[in-house]
Figure 1 (spheres, rainbow, N blue to C red):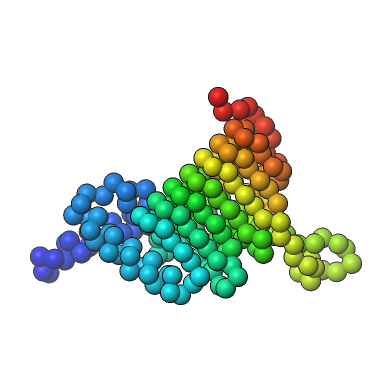
Figure 2 (figure 1 turned 45 degrees about the horizontal axis):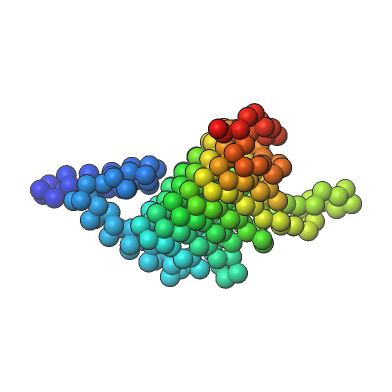
Length: 205
């Protein structure tokens, strides 16, 4: 074992930690920030070569996330945004600045797309699907046309863990959606909602 082995092992373990807790990237000490930035730059360059993805400044994108953005389904990621491990993102997606997407989230933009405004916080295991199937009885569901209206999440919105967002929903600025909620209708500014389907509890003061 060389003197470098313990350091390399630590670095690999720290990468795992950052993959699942990417907010730690922004508080790394300078000696760790140097290798972490190089690691991120290499991966983000690769991602932008392979997919139609634009990535802003000072972002963290876990290499364990699954990001797909073929032509016509672009993904745009703003500055100071992080995407954690085991997320699946499929464009079209427009992601603002200072957005947090925690591990195991699924965002599928369908045809119209998903727009996340600045400072949106999405906790683990949230699912946003900007498409839906027809449900007529005259043919199997898988043969029916897929429709897409899009999803829009306003500034400073917080989605708790395990939240589902239905196609066509708009959530206004500074709203909060409680854990395990299913959002089927629009949510107004500063509303705090929860439940399945999600209902108004009170307003942020």
